[in-house]
Image 1: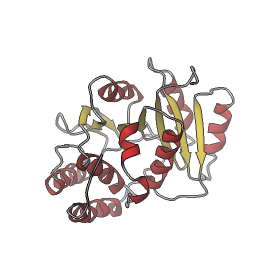
Image 2: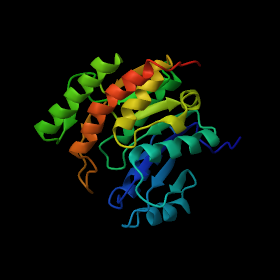
Image 3: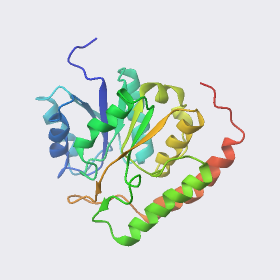
Length: 246
């Protein structure tokens, strides 16, 4: 085993994140717990991958997975999960590049799995109220009620079902058939949590404050929420005809 390798890897999907990527890498590497980083870049035309590759010459904890073009957030994370499983990381964490997730929250998110017995830990915007900064009220309401709707349809006891700041124990990712995950956009987040829930894995929510991006361009649009609203019914119905054996 490589003594310099962390037990935890942070997956950061990127598309045109040159304003944020070096800062987010520095912030993660500066934490008291050592985390490795895998950037999954979808051929960003702004040169994000080149910035990461330059950092890699100085910082061996940083890795990159380059893909030929935009293929969806879900497929980026699936590629990252497979890479993390192959490299035997115990804890695999999804995180945005734009500082909407505070890097300092990586420590309690990992601890929920490593120390508190969770199989999946979620950086939750809604477990202690509504902890979202700089979002228009319409978007806050849409996100909050979409999450409530998903909770009702799926039966998951999770307040923030669409959260994208999540830590998985490797066993969870090895148990789920990643090639059968259907959704490519933000409904991917719901599908992963629902599948883990159906397998009986323990899910814990860790309160965070979510801050809307300052630099770069948001990838969110109304179609993403549409996918989540209709996709969750499909997930629930299909689950009646599946067995979830660990």
